[in-house]
Length: 272
Image 1: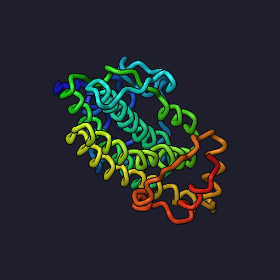
Image 2: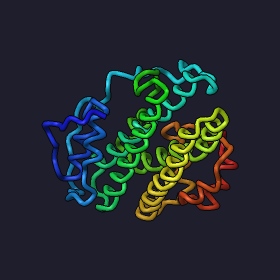
Image 3: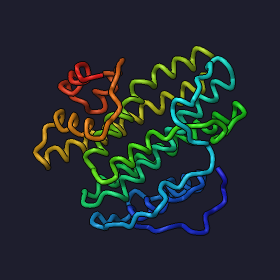
Image 4: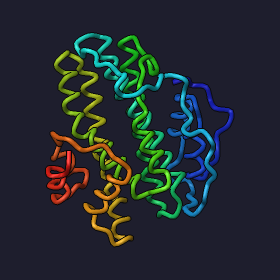
């Protein structure tokens, strides 16, 4: 990243600082702000913050295209491997934005809610930086390949519904990463990319914790509203047209992330 110090350090209150970072367009500046934010900063849980017109701030590259326009590249070629690493890095960058968004957008939760998601943003920032540094060893950088915007599109759909955000993003979209990471790691190992595979191991370990945070606060809302987890999840998935969940599922990782046996059984029987 560019080591220049931003002339505007931004607000100190945690939720306002998250919004400030989310709105920054340059990825290196955004990540510097996230890395510098203090987990013990004061939190105004009740503040209703004004939404800027254009969120998230994003760099002009990568070009965002429909998923169908992203052509698969053979991972055995240097460009194909770089494209794969770039795609994962783009997911991690979007995950930074998603964590920042949930911090500023949804008022009225306990202080630990906001600190948990700031912790997620910091770890997602670390994942992106590891991947981008590895991408540089292959002769590429973030923005050199097109990408899609699926994660942020779900954030837009759920911008007025915290329950939907919690169950559809960490418990569907990010949990899918728990299923996919071992397969991607094995592909990288098969072509001799041990450094890339090691990064995937770090990401999987920490993403289990991120999904667990999603499960923790989803269950908090279920208890607060007297809702059954499986029935409410199914209702929200249908309402917001969430992607269907398809196996194979990494059941060990999902258990570690807090999915119970009833939820795992539902995965096996839910419509594909």
